[in-house]
Amino acid sequence: AQSVTQPDIHITVSEGASLELRCNYSYGATPYLFWYVQSPGQGLQLLLKYFSGDTLVQGIKGFEAEFKRSQSSFNLRKPSVHWSDAAEYFCAVVSGGYQKVTFGTGTKLQVIP
Amino acid sequence: NAGVTQTPKFQVLKTGQSMTLQCAQDMNHNSMYWYRQDPGMGLRLIYYSASEGTTDKGEVPNGYNVSRLNKREFSLRLESAAPSQTSVYFCASSESLAAYNEQFFGPGTRLTVL
Image (cartoon, rainbow over all chains, first blue to last red; front, side, top):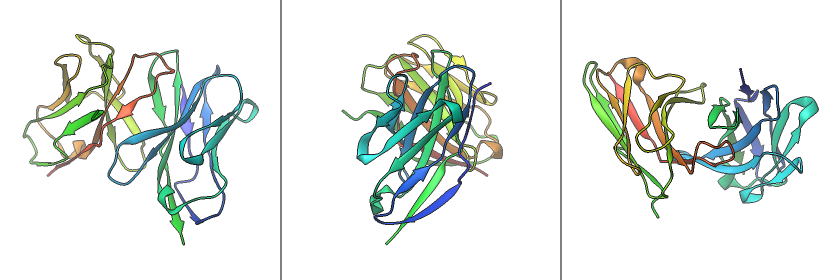
């Protein structure tokens, strides 16, 4: 069965610092991978997705993620964090060619001045 | 476009009461979903509807029923609420069940069962 692990429950970074959120998945074939962001009191919004091709994908709000098959990872990065990036971030994997989505447990990002 | 809307935003129920959570999308999507979100557990799929007229169980369907009223609307019913159903409920939609389709989420309903 597919699974997604986000090892960091909570991360605090200073505004302007770089950010990397970790995501590891377990699935036999190449999965479809997603990162979603959830601002307080809101639903989830798609940041970026990976299906195939270039392993470095660009998303909205200046985020990017890199798929590393050898490490079964899909880490999310941002070079310079803004206070408005404070939110909860979810990694998700879809397998089987249809929408059987497994979400990670989320990483809550706090941004300090 | 409003996207995905959910009503109500907040609800408090007593154990044993029933209620229906409403969801509507205006993106002409075929597929719709209901998730629950609990602290430390991410989102778990309760039910989904691949297209109008079809519904299927997800990961945690016990205690819930759904109705795909038409292409736009997908409701979730709790027949006899239990404290274990205290959660935040999200409705989502996508163009189809194909894995590459993005899911669009509503703002959520925060439900407390006393």
